Image 1 (tube, rainbow, N blue to C red):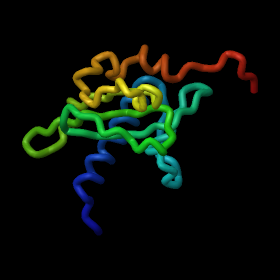
Image 2: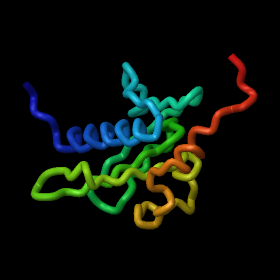
Image 3: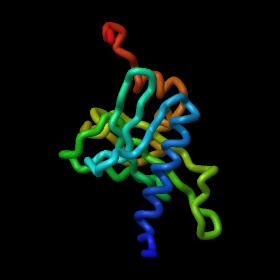
Image 4: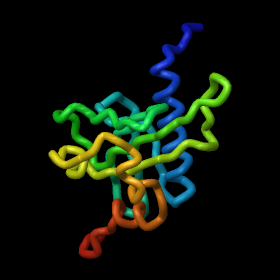
Length: 134
C-alpha cells in the first residue's frame, strides 16, 4: 500500500470531522463520486450545498482559489497532541463564499468566534426555499 502524504491525511481527517459534525446537526454530507473541485456535497431537507474544506493546525485560514465554486467553506482547526491529531478538540468554522471573497475577510480564525459550527449557523446556511414545490 502507498503511504499517505501528511497533507492528504490532515485534509481527509478534516473532511471526516465536517461530515460527522454536520450529521450531528441533521446534515448529510459525502464526497462527490468524481473530484469536481468540491470536497463534500451537503444536504439538509431539500437544500443542497457544495462544501470546500480546509484543515489547519494553526489559527489561519487558507482561502480556496477564486475560480473554485462552492457555497460553504468549512475550516477545521485540528490541534495536535503528542504528535497526533486531537479530533475530539477540533473546531469547525463555517463561512459563505461571499464572506470569504470579501476584501474585509480576516484569515485569522480567532477573529471569527461567531462562525464556529452551531445549530443557528446551520439553520442560516441551509435555509429552505418555501416557494419550492415538488
